[in-house]
Image (cartoon, rainbow, N blue to C red; front, side, top):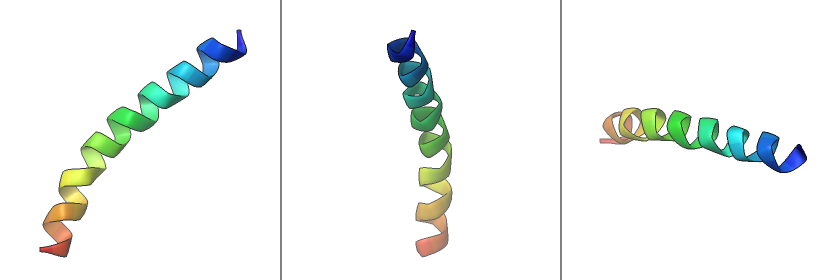
Length: 29
């Protein structure tokens, strides 16, 4: 059960960072 929870959290973090990455890149330019 713990493994599944961690996997889901990683999935969410991955998608969130994917959305934030381009925004941060745009700001630093």
